Image 1 (spheres, rainbow, N blue to C red):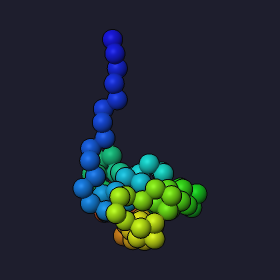
Image 2: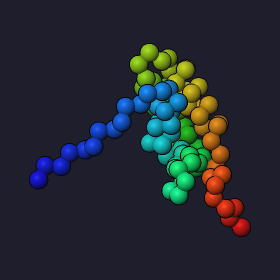
Image 3: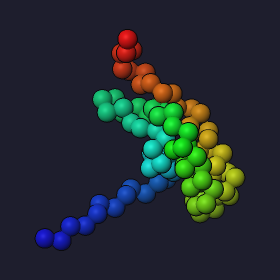
Length: 88
């Protein structure tokens, strides 16, 4: 049986592109229960995401704009899910 990869959905916004870059680099993750993005606080993953944005920005976007968007998205994401109870 021939197995094919499911195509990735088209990214429609620069913010969506930045989120996908951060997810692939492992800099953020999604809360399994609620779906909120969470910062993994991994400096190496952040650098991988920024380097990817610098090397391969979306069409029509400069490398500086791509890096700025990745940083803006990362700065807007907390490290906890706002719907999960605090761990104590």
